[in-house]
Image (tube, one colour):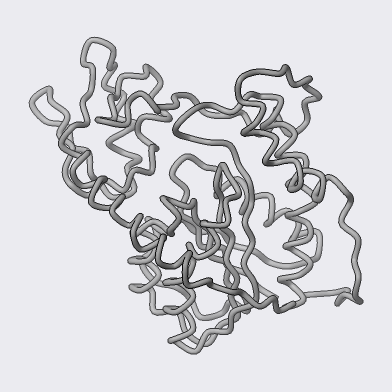
Length: 294
């Protein structure tokens, strides 16, 4: 078996999940490739299974993801979806609706969809102790994803009409991304001209010339530029009060044993408890698996 994971990941949450999934596939003797959607020109046709992974933006898949999947014209494949977000609202349950319709239109066979909790890259920074607990719980969840998808276990998906309606209303976020593009600024007193933002923008939205940074109107609010700026020099328009700067060190945090200290966000984090308690339990197979996927 050969698996392809197609991922869009603004600040590496979705990429991290795909990389951990690849490790689990390798334990099952499954060849796995990961490709970032912004770098894919065309696909080989030798994959048995395709995973599509993205961060949820305002209860939808990013328009960039929908556009790239449409352009790639994937046909006649089994596929599954992994979406990531910093909360587990039911409103997120229809985020894949357009991708699902698009893929099935091309005679692809849907297997399942998985919603993986990961820390925020906007609004506020998750405490390290919470992030550590999430990553540890996700180990078992990702192992479950590897077993279920490699054995092509089918799970029905139900797109509720009321959630589809709300999803469509919140697509106004895409217009907001366009309008907010005019408000992005770089603090040249702090900026060291490392060009990390220019070189890593997935839509090539940032240009530098004549000692000035110019932000075009292709921003998709992935937060990659402001999140990874080493000098915290980028102002993200009307969302600046929600800006989170600086990466989470997942490789350290997934092994740490940190004690959570109660704070004003307790009620928000308490919403995660059912998810954490479910996935902190070791994954147990309830069906016979195929031993060798080579």
